[in-house]
Image (cartoon, rainbow, N blue to C red; front, side, top):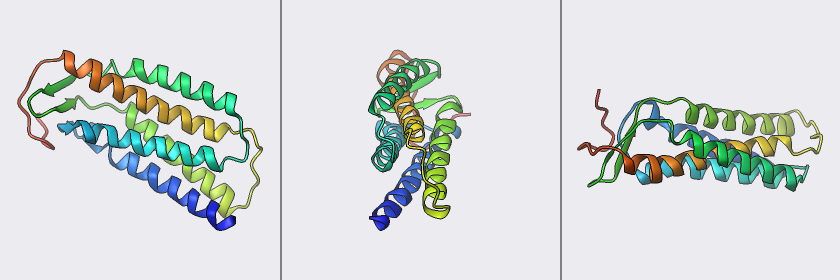
Length: 169
């Protein structure tokens, strides 16, 4: 059982690191496809799912509230960035934003905290499920943000011919 928890904690850290790494197109202001926009969210949701599964405190009501609030806040946050879209190639580019990267970074920090405290320090959790709720909030925030950005904000913008992975400064 201990080896399964170790593998799950390492998987959560790896998935969170992949979520953070795959958001690089936001910081570099490069054009990205819909798949590249959804990939960090998929990694974040997978990270939160792993942390929910291995959480010793099964607090379903707290987790549902965290997911609902995170998703609602993310839906609102997705309307803030100024998006530009290439409608023919389905590429989207936004001006540099930090909120998604910060959320993914915090998710990585939470996964690392769970790994270090549980596996390296052997500390028992308080059983409240707060860390898993925070991870769920961040993953839901990223999901709501990308949904609004791709399906509401970007389609209502101007067309600009772009090349995938290229910045236009």
